[in-house]
Image (cartoon, rainbow, N blue to C red):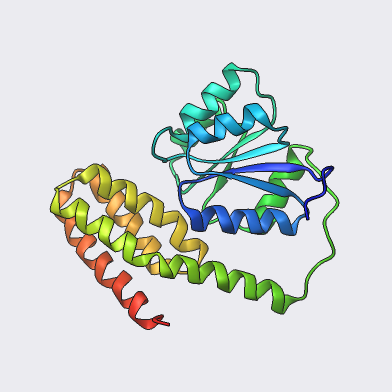
Length: 228
């Protein structure tokens, strides 16, 4: 049951796995969370509810995180908006911080990083009693399993991008995996995603396509090892 006086934070990401994991981490700190799957929905919720902070992904369908942050600032939304991204180029990060975001939270997101950024921006809350380590790990395992169960969808999207020669879609999927896979300790997948994105940025399309085929094989390998 949600306490009406419990501080609310909005979590915005088109990946359900990312939303659930970040929401879980925030709830462990005593916050209530709402979710939005794109920037447009985030703007709607932020105009309706009183949030103490927003954690915003960048690359989303319908409306990007950057567009949403700019709209919210233009309508005088004052709570901190933290950009959550696997972006690692300092120039791009600095540009984001000049475009409406209050701070940068790198993916994969760690619980201690969340605490630090909330403390830095003077957002505090009374945390609930800590659960035992076993219960905490069980929740993490459940979230990881949801990611694994969604692998067929991800594989289909990559195959569709390759079949349609859609480099933009392939780059978007690779960028998303770069952050999401790391959250669930699939570092090899995150590295391949990073390599694909980097190859596309450098116009090395043959390399990107080769690595995309390798990515599909790796995702299928993980799926086969975790068949329930």
